[in-house]
Length: 193
Image 1 (tube, rainbow, N blue to C red):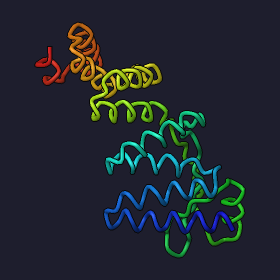
Image 2 (image 1 turned 120 degrees about the horizontal axis):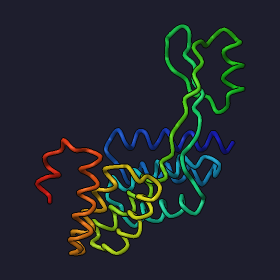
Image 3 (image 1 turned 180 degrees about the horizontal axis):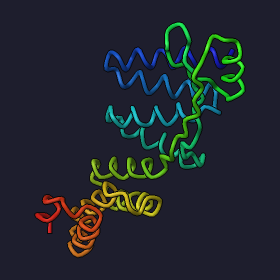
């Protein structure tokens, strides 16, 4: 019964998104997670939509909860296409997908590995705090994001921007130089030195 309730909440979230109602969308996804707490992806989606909708207090709470849960987003999607329509269907487990393929109604089973979003969670928190002009908290979260993904140029540039806002010019210039090593053909970075 709980998975059915969660699916209804997820459908309601999709409808809310389609009508540009980010508030209802993130609340429905959070409710879906609270209904089925093992589905942490819904909590992550709720946090992202809350961030996009600029519901920063809710986004901060949801993102910190993801950190407390140790959520990384690493997972595997199990899909197959319906033979008659070629529509892709996502299955909860590999076994469910494989059994469905054996029925002859599905074909083309695919296991898709989903990469970690851990650095994205910390980067999102940093950007929220930057928008709220709490640059010290922003720096603490972007530093963690940078530790998780040290060669991510977007994180490096976000960290440089936070240093700029904190009037830490030497640290800013050092990060721009690192960004230039990663992306030497970016003329915009040269102008920032």
